[in-house]
Image (cartoon, one colour):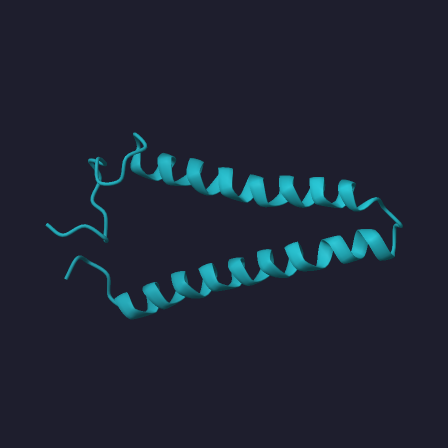
Length: 87
């Protein structure tokens, strides 16, 4: 074993975090346009712009986070040990 006492617990926790993050982002991207149009009487083009930046920032954050994790931007080029790579 690689020093992790409860690998199923760790993997389950990561999966739970990813599911909750995705669920929250989907809920917000569905709810925000209706909120802005109904409560704030906003222009649909403005709402679309806000939604574009919200979803785009999530994409950019995911790409930057992936590059930060691997060190150079390419998967598998990291010198640090990764639980996803085989020895």
